Length: 281
Image (tube, rainbow, N blue to C red; front, top):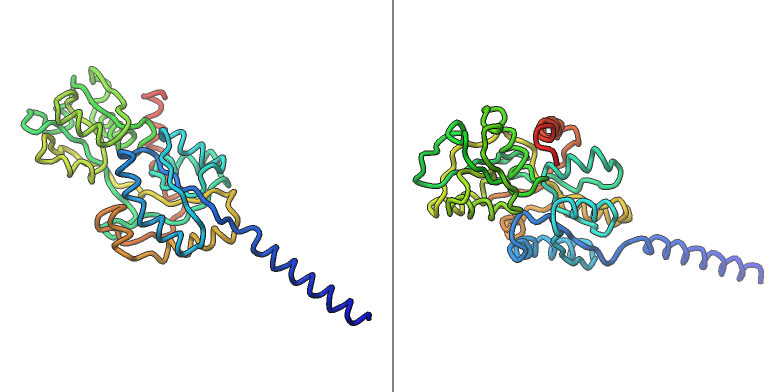
């Protein structure tokens, strides 16, 4: 009788351990992004990655585009979004102001084979604006106030060139596409954005007149509210990803993800502080 009781107790204990080991794993996750492109374009862009992560982790992953950059970060920190693709400025803010709230899954390695990239400044094709100096006394379009390549980097470039204070007008238009369209239509004389968007509009009313210094790339991150078992599955899947069918929709020629350190973004943090001092939020 005692032997049967012991066997039963061991069996129950093992069952409890098995349940405990699987109970923490999340089966439903939300993948969120900031609106750096049109919502329908973003949904198409991230679908292959979401499908891949679902297959590798066994979790069901839904997609959500945040209202703006701030909302995207707030939702991630709160755990309402579990996985997110962040621009460098958002990641720099998150790792400084919300340390411990997010965890890096991987940093983009682009077609240059590095985890760094550059922003560009455009002007209307056919205009007399061919350099940063030519933008003195002109109107300039930025994307989102928290964007790396459509706010911080172009603003810093204009400040370094002694142009920013002379602008007669500057506005935040939300997305990189909005910047390109506004410049192509002549609503603004110049604008800052990411190269992949600018290149779509070259030959359609815009030209590239300057590029920024390199900064570290976009990242995939996960909320610290997600259990460690799921985080490990996600990180392993992200760092092992080499399939062009999944990577190309994210960024043409992208080769994968690597691990970087929060301090790799210190140079960007310095730029952001200089811009914030002259361009209050």
